[in-house]
Length: 191
Ligand code: ADP
Image 1: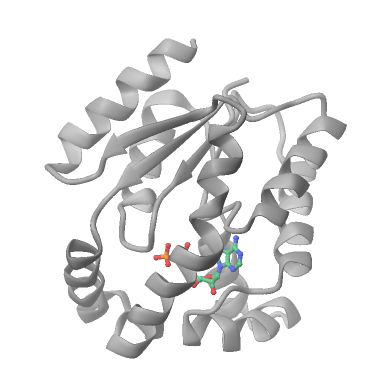
Image 2: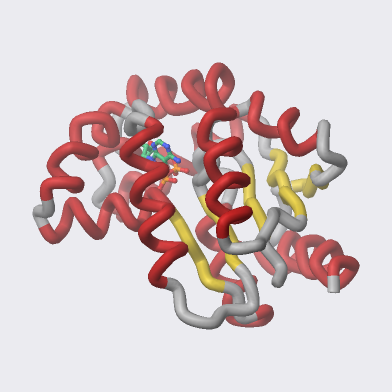
């Protein structure tokens, strides 16, 4: 199994690249942001709980996210592996992910980190906000908060994987196709 953490700040292109990876490599895409937005759309209790945090660009509490991911992994039928997008976002979540994979006799193969500087992220998120309908993309204060939360709470997750020699940096600026080529090159090495 190939279990990949696709990492990077908001607007780095994780969702876009995940779709391409899924098509080519047949992995199951597990995006916590998408799962939360689905719950929000369906008006579930979990969606209602997450909404306030998401709209402000804050993190949903670890326990809530971890439970949701556990459930998703447990209900996944035979897959070649997972691509984790937007998770783990805290070191606590990274520890929990290792634990839950272990109970299925699995582990993370590698983290691929999309590197994009903050000025480019701001431009991309504002542009996306024009069409995404996402409240967290439409307001500069919320965008700034997400970048701040990323720097303070999420960036340390990269060190967690660096310490395990599972970290690979990918330049996240260029055409979608050229970035996908870099990712594919890395993934081939794990096969
Ligand atoms: P982006 O990467 O563009 O910021 P996501 O779609 O990954 O957006 O996530 C949207 C929001 O969902 C986050 O700002 C946060 O509120 C919530 N969220 C998603 N994943 C997590 C997570 N692993 N831990 C806590 N909150 C999360």
